[in-house]
Image (tube, protein in one colour):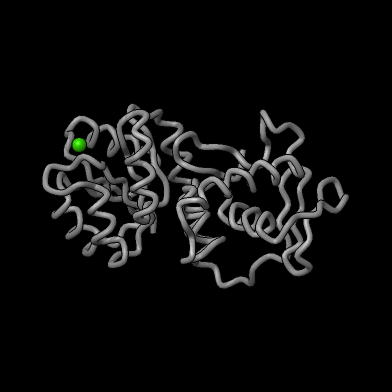
Amino acid sequence: MSKILIIEDDLSIRHFLSALLSTQQYDVVEAADGQSGFSMALSHNPSVIILDLGLPDIDGVSWIRNYKQLINSTIIVVTARDDHPSKVAALDAGADDYLTKPFNSGELLARIRVAYRHLSQRNSAVALPSQFCYKDLRIDFEKGRVFLNDTEVHLTPIEHQILLFLAKNQGRVLTSRMIIKEVWGSTATEGDAQNLRVVMANLRRKIEPSTTRPSYILTVTGVGYRFNDD
Ligand code: CA
């Protein structure tokens, strides 16, 4: 169940990760390139894959594009500092989360716990909860209503849809492109990125106690948005 595959060509990072995860009782397997990583993903069926984007034989983003549909694993990519375009490309390709090098051990373990939490939610056959609560915000899914401190917040259909999409993916980074696709569907155009910023600003004005220091919808600079789960 708690098997993790590390696909990383840098030996010292791979060993560090392997040692760290082993102390947490994860069952760790390792691969040094994309091709053997894919073979191991098929043979070991890991719950989580930690994937380096700079692999010797294949670019990590292409790896996700080629193989994500063929495996069942949650993919956490590891990428160089402040490399926003590759984070966005990896998330758009189907990565579930990312970490920036050099990463902090505590942060990595926290991301892995989030990945397992999402996996267990995905695997549990229980019916969807009828409401979502976080801090002072409550979303009633059945009635399609949103409350802040028990006072109803009136949202436009698009604001409502964006809030639900973020809340249902609490803790997970969603790229602007993912949100636009969810809301505007296949008819999305270039102009929708600007529309999204406008809708997001309006939504925040309605739910956030402070728009400069949001408590619910956090901006992930250069990448997208994440519903707070602290
Ligand atoms: Ca590398």
